[in-house]
Length: 292
Image (cartoon, rainbow, N blue to C red; front, side, top):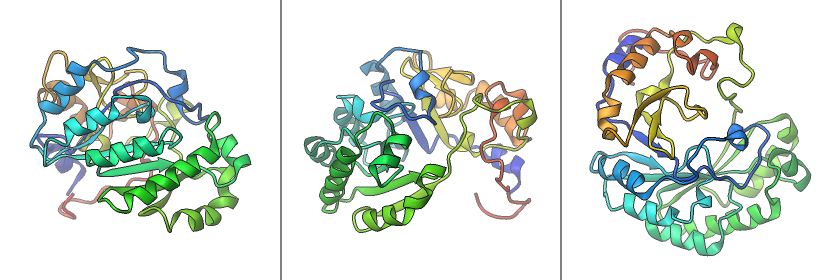
């Protein structure tokens, strides 16, 4: 399938919906722009997260009730996951740094029917951990995530433990793998991406399509839908759940315009994308090759 075909045959519904139920995070990771976040409100109103979920039921969507935050900072998380799981076609995923995952919360979340969780743990030893995840207690994370994995072993919840590859943790990866492989369903080592508009300049523009717009949808706490999970400042707003349904936004003219530009790799014409080098090594299939 060619680049243009991928965007012309754009699905009529998103495969993934991320909703930022709070802007809070218990970490201050040096690579993450969340610590500089100034927009509000602090929490998404209940009427908004219920509207997003209720208006996309029975569509087989994967929901991620977090965005630029730590989901466990929201004490409503279990309620939100339970509400999503009333839809038998829905799948629920979380990303967490793990520090707030007490045994009580682990049991409560597993009881909701949580389908998948990825724990971001970027070191094995205390010294390296304090450099990669400042403000978060390494020993508490290891104790609590270990216990979660043990509890999840008797459920259908899929557990991931992932390390972002950095210079600081190069020498710890094998020890890290040996510790976590007996506990988690999957141990991953992932690249560190740059947030748009951090270090990139006009010379760094990547004139390529982007897969994000093909199946993912993102909502801020105020109900605005944005183009990308890395859009921390709202540079690519595509709609507002206060005014429209999720599918009206997804199939609306603003997204259609972005889709057309990205099908041609014209990131430079989109304010947000004009300073993004994500997926710069992505190779799109030539025409009539591949199914997706």
